[in-house]
Image (tube, rainbow, N blue to C red; front, side):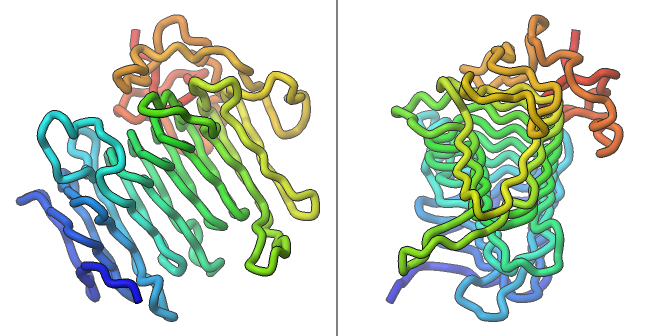
Length: 329
């Protein structure tokens, strides 16, 4: 028996920015219900608290999250301790969990910080695609993982994920993923980090020690930056019996120098060059004037995804910069 404090949302519900929302325990968004969070809303989580979309204990699980932030009026998710000591302390709350069966989730212009896992995305393989659309969002200072996806479908554009205790991004047990103009940069320095920024995986081992294949049908990174403080920021956990499709397209990657990037998995990548952020120690991941990522992206990727504006609303050049930020002279 597990006992924990929670609040159930069982109908369409809106949260607005008139007052802060303080969460003790967990919020469950139940079957066929929608939690709509409007621009400027601030959600403060107490220790061991979180937001769960869908009810994982319900066989008819569903539920939907809509986060409707706008530039300079983002929706903020963080811990409820507001004194200076806690301003950049990771692990103060649990996570946002899009549990199996949740559908048509959208997060736009959010700031998610100082938790354990930023967004945990599961799926049951239903017809609602993608499981999550994630746009113009900053995930920062998670004690464990920034985005933890399991067999799900995510479309992400103009996102920044930085400073996580283990991974910035885990694409586990297969799925379908598209990330464009995103920056994944891990300079975690609160403890020793032995895991790379990015993990890709296409299987799991069940309770009977049998290998179960979960195909990684697609993991695409277009005009992205993947960098950090380790020698390599990638782990490819591949089972040869399953599909393991990934593609880094016009992206800057920090990867094992012995890996051959002259193949179909890599197109016009910048390999193991420092992107030269303006001030990564203070989470400023905009590009310095000497960055090799400037004008190294592919404008066709920008155009195909209607990404003419960066995360701050600046117009992108042709050719564009890699990552979420357009360089401003």
